[in-house]
Length: 160
Image (cartoon, rainbow, N blue to C red; front, side, top):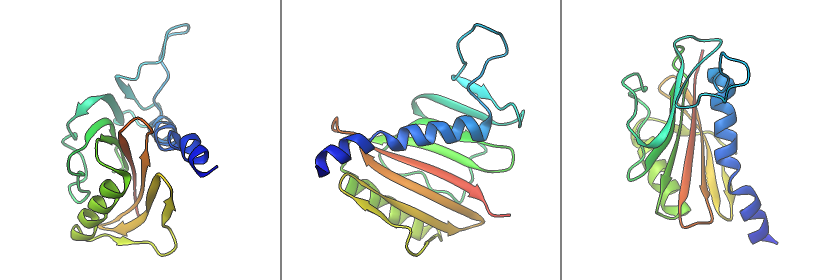
């Protein structure tokens, strides 16, 4: 039962991040009726300066918040930064869920972030939680993709 639940929930991180990026950045639609959505670099409808890039092994954009560390060893498949400083990214790794989660926890702690009490996600095949610091609240979810890879999704929200 636990393995079935893990397999069912493993893609949740990717789906949730994609939904956040599309809603938060306003992307996903095209300006022409009857054409496919443009995801390569989708401009935000509510924020004309917001963009989300989707691809393989993407570099972080120049406007990536400098206080949010890039995880070690992963390849970014989507990255977005809104004009207001909110940022989202999704990385894929060949390391285990436990390794990716614990390595990123160390990076966040070193960067000055503190784990939000009672926010831990610790289910077989998934780990994560919320962090606060440097003017941001971060939501991190690390998931076993079931294919020998692990994903890390990050949603960073500016504290106003």
